[in-house]
Image (cartoon, rainbow, N blue to C red; front, side, top):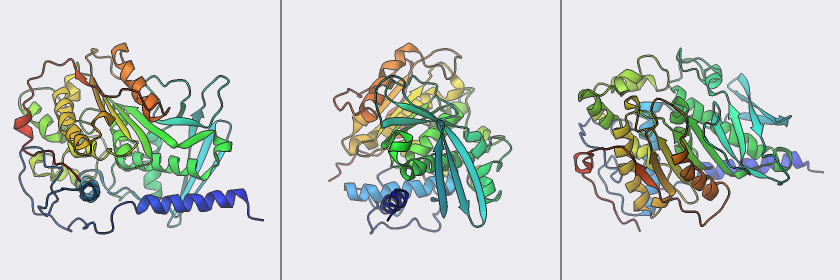
Length: 398
C-alpha cells in the first residue's frame, strides 16, 4: 500500500517542477557579459538588455526572468534552488526543516502560532522574518524564524546557509534569507495541512528594517508568496539606489549603497564594485518592485517619511516608478504604498497605516475579493520630479 507521506512527496515534486518551468521556453538567457553603460535615470524595465522592447505579457514574463538574473549577478548573489534532499517534521507548534546538499547538512526550526478561538483551518499564514511588527488579523497564522541564524548580518558569510553552501558562496544575507523563506514554503508543501493546519496556497511574508529588505527579496524571488509587506526597509528594499545616491550628494543623512556595504553582509561581494558608480548598474529597485506583479499576488510597501536615513524620497519615487510595471499588466491595485511620519519610532506601525495593512491581508490572505487595496499615499512634502528619473513609457501589453 502506498503511504500518504509518499503521495505528498510525489505531489510536492510535481509542484516544484512546475514552479521551475513557468517561464516561456523561448526566453533568451542573460548574456554572459554586458558592456557597462551609464544610465543616469531609472533603467527601463520594459527593454531587454539586447535592446528589444517588451510589447506582450509573454515577453514581460521573459523580461522578468532577466531582471531576476540581473539582480542576482550584480547585487544579491545567486539564490540556490531547493536542496537535493529536504525533509520536514512538525510538532508542538514548531516545524523543523532539514536540508542536505553535496555531503553537507543543516537544519533549522520555525515557530507557528495558529489563530486562537473556535475557527477551524487550514489557515493562511504570514512568514515574519525575526517576528511580526504589523498587526496580523484573526484567521491568519504567524510563522517566525531567526533569519540571522541563516545568514548573520555581521560578520559576512556566517550562518547555516554558508554551512551548507560554503563561506565562499557569493550570495549575500538578503538572498540567503529569501532562500530560507522558500524552504519554509517547501516544508509546508511536504507536510499535510491536516498536520500543520496551514493553507500553503495563501502565504505572505513580512519584516521590518533589515528584515523588510529580506521580505521584499523573498517575495520577488518566490511566486508562491501571495502577499509581501516590507516595513520601513529603506535602501536595499523599496528604495532606488540612484535616487538615494542623489539624496546623499545633496546632503541628506541617508544610507546609500556605498555605506550599506561597509559592515553589513546583506549583498553579494560583487556589488561593492558598483556602489561608487551606481549609474552603471543595469537595474534598480523599481524593477525589484515589479517582480512581485502577478495574478493573485499583492505588495504593500510601508515606509516612514520622518526618518531621513530610510531615504523617504527614494522609496516614494522608486515606488511611483515600480507601480508603472503593475499598471502595464492592469494590476495597479495589487501594489500599495503607505508612507507616514512617526518620528524615530522605527518598526512601530502607527494607527493611520493599519487600515491598508488590514485591507491587503483581507484581500490576499483571507480571500476577501472585494476589498479595496487601491492605496498610494505619503504625508511627505516632496518635490519629486518623475521626469528627472523616468524617460520610458508604459507599454500596452497584449
